[in-house]
Length: 225
Image 1 (cartoon, rainbow, N blue to C red):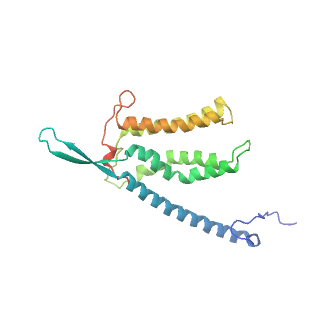
Image 2 (tube, rainbow, N blue to C red):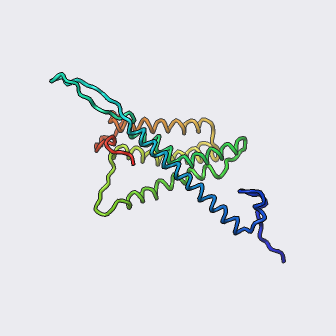
Image 3 (tube, rainbow, N blue to C red):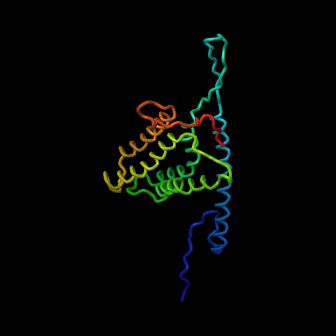
């Protein structure tokens, strides 16, 4: 009886790879994957350093003291930390998932069904960020040290929009147009990201009628590390 083991005829790393044993091919692919992860970590570290440099950029503001008539020089942050956290840093940490989803979408242009790589990566990454990342943030502080949320109101706004994203996916995939994403649903999804930025900024600035009356230490005083 012949062997039922099937091998892939297409090569991934170099020509002639199919002539190697499966164990050797698996080892080479593992090394290549680890090399890619190391490169990705280096790019991510450089990205975070650049984002920290951008968010720490300040401008000089001169005001006049009404009592002494002397100039007062203050240094104000150019970037709002709440917007920087949601826009710049979130984009940087999610760049691999966004890249995979974009590549998968381009490869499946013109087809009736989406590829499994893009949607699965985004949903899985969101679920991972929602649960394990929060757990790591809780257990990482050393014994005796204390960390707290600098602005509970902004955190609640982000938490609401995080859960709303899953509810929105259910609505557009199961209620309105089952198993189909229409153009206007996609546009509404992108528009809601802008609404998230506006809502978070309004909460950070304590706009009346649209912000939660919760106060705490300002995120402007906390450096991003």
